[in-house]
Image (cartoon, rainbow, N blue to C red):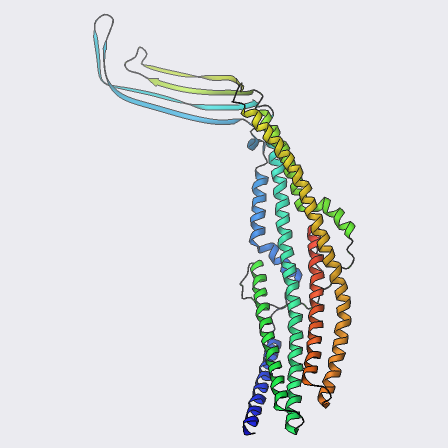
Length: 448
């Protein structure tokens, strides 16, 4: 009997300790609440700092810089050269009259300099195909950069709503702990007056400990998700913040409108279409090598030569030189035909890629829309279940207080209420994830 009383005292102390810890933790949170980070602020920070976005924008600038006639080979190349050669030789000459001329140290030198121009004026229209290709690559980099922004924004939004979902779960778990503590208090009071056994107190204490452990796990996951969001925002991972507590789901999405919009605005489909145009241009580039290449060359040269042992000791010259060069490939081992066949196959592959991408997008939209509708239905059902489970729990607590139901029954009512809340929050998050992803696919993402 003394052992049971001692055990009861320990349980009471432990319950008080848990209550104090939870209470002090709540007070500390209230007094030192971290600053609120709104969804709009999170997206703005990510758009400014995220490394993936910065890299994509830099690649876009590079592609844009490459769209020039010079990069395509349309413009001439102008350069200038300066050449100087020197020699010091011992020369012995025997002339036609038999005399000998000896020069022990003949210093020869030549100096020439001047500008030159080389211009390919025709290459089978390959240079114009190159220019069109650079334009398409620039357009592709623009779509890729926008898609990176879209993906990053989506990740930030979904992570933020995940935090809201977890925060609601944590609040529900706090409520469960409060109920478990009340149950423990009732069990102790009943044991004190002899209307309950110490087994009821043990069970109530185990329930409280279990709920507290569940809360600690939720808090750890919540912290981990905060770190992940901070990483997306490129700031100190330990930066603390709070989030709003509301998830509003747009329930007006129509499947037909989403499918139609995706065909026009989906970045993956647009990229596939650009790749098809690039494949068409590649065939033009390959076919251009069947034609002759005509190049124009011109230059102006100044030269000075000094040859002590020659008939002319010094010579200065300057003048214009110019010419035209034409070349054509007559036979290259049938490689031209092979390259053209491969280029046509690449065009077919690009066309298939468009169809494949469209099918993938349509399938993804269909699956997400099923999840979206299911989530909306679960939200409506969940609201009713939460209200019913709360009323059932309140009634069960009153009955448990007067001893008309068992501890197992009150625990079941408590668990039903917690499950109803969890299902409702999860349904909200499921619908929001589907909604945001559908808007991302159709390039209609907005922040609410």
